[in-house]
Amino acid sequence: MIAFLSVGQSIAESLETAAPDIKERLNGYLADHWQCGCSPATLATVFALQDTITCDPKAREGRSGGTGLQDMLDFVNTLGAGQEGNGSRVTIVSGRSCIRMRAPYIMGVREGGEATKPRLLWFNKENTAREPPDSEFAFDLEQPLSGTLVSIAFTLDPAFLRKQVEKEDGSDRP
Image 1 (cartoon, rainbow, N blue to C red):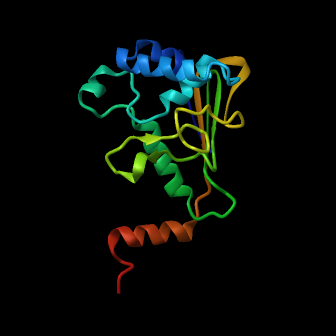
Image 2: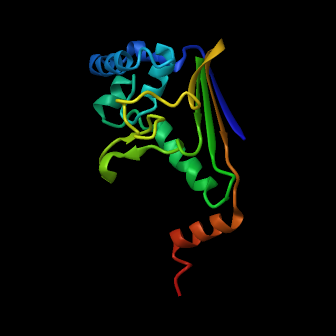
């Protein structure tokens, strides 16, 4: 298991400095799900996990921001692939919000499978912002954490990793 701790603002609090268009989209998402049982902060945390959501103006200008979490999920899933019943797991505790990423909600999906589309992970069967997140995967905590904790767990399968390396370097070809 690997864990990262950032003391200070929660993910939801950091969105207070987001660009106006991101705040507008966030407010729409909050308005759609205000009665779903999750606090606005937990809904905002789910919203923030989508590709392209960033509070960094320089990253927005360069169109390079807001992909870090989804990149990390791709990496963790690649490393943890091949272990039957031992799937990768990522948990985020941020403020009073807890987001549990595990099967079936562990990887963002690109709309229509198009490589240029952002990866989305809305924690519902339809993987859409129009539906609220599954309460087993996104929920409120009784006590807040002053900041954000990300824990990552996966099992390495040496045979699977060897095959991946061979595929990358071409040594699996006759």
